[in-house]
Length: 529
Image 1 (cartoon, rainbow, N blue to C red):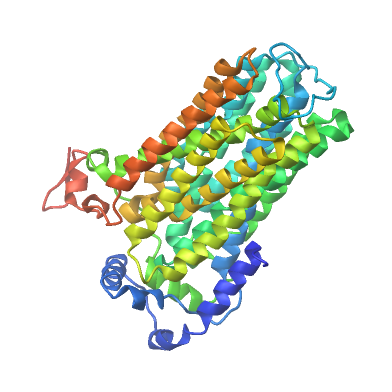
Image 2 (cartoon, rainbow, N blue to C red; image 1 turned 90 degrees about the horizontal axis):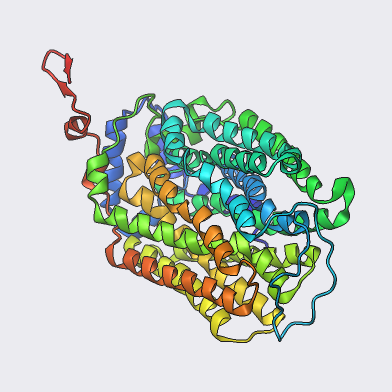
């Protein structure tokens, strides 16, 4: 089955286009649509029968549309960003000087072959700090990135984030050999530059993608992260093993160079909104504006007080934190686990570390298509709950299996592939909840939840480093996996109990939102604080 992003998008476009002409004929004399009127139309459409809504959004005659290009560009950009994020988790194995202290191999695995060491004397806590330093910077810029994208445009904010990340990645080898502290600072800055991309993309999708198309398009775009891990991890292992330019430095040169090319094409090909796109057809532009509204240059204040007292929002924050804890434990520690417990060499390590994400990418694409197909038969809330039950409890059982069973190296990899793969259901679960709860503030809301959810990005590796320092044993890694299993269970259960698929009252911009900023508008138009 061919499920490449281009094929999925082309198929989506061709299937949608057949029925688009009928209602579009009514709008040949289309004039500017007022945003408030558009929102009223959207509310009316939401009240329509679900099956009828499933037939909406099938317009424009092109086989490939401007929003398809946006989705494909987003997919590639997220893949490159993912490569720059995870490359250190494999490269660090080649960077660190070899040591036998505390090493112990699994009885089910063959004795470890001699492995070449690096030149950098970093102990386990230092490695944990380096692996987590990306996230120290990442959490700082999420909220600011969301607001900046809403005010300045998602294209510019997203493209600048990728460009700066690429430049800093190119500087990583010299910084690592110069000073550990300098390398930590560079990784933090890469994280800060990357922190704006998720909120900026949410802002773009809210303007470009009609509600009926968002589930599929969001999955295609965000699945670029998994594709990047799938390509980046084995490629990092291969580049390290090649020995060219010292092996591991080549990793940063390659991904940094690709990042520069990607940022350049993004800034040239993508526009902030349909109205500003130079190559979009009038028919497609009219259709998008009809369902998404015209992009406004001014945004209202964010309803902080109402958001912080919303139980569904807190359930979203909690599940986001929990899922990231488990995910980042696997992303940053899987190569080290495979090396020290199952004794894979650096090249095999990168390839095997990528297999779970190949599974996740394939599963997420197939699963989102299936859920889209049956969405007219079940409620949106049921889609979210089913998806997150799979995405939370599936990895939990996988990690528990690693804890209680003495697995061979082959079976361990199979379990990890299944555990990580089925977590791809999250793209149809909590990753859509931001737009469910507050579509008008989805970018900023994602920035808020993602800021808190990336605390595990540095906390999980640090805790793993403390547990496994001088104690690279099966028992120590079981403790790591038990903690992650408990986090998956508790946070997933909270989401299932308290999440909502309804728009929250504070989503609508109103004078009460103004009141939260202590601003009163008089009848004469004057503002008083």
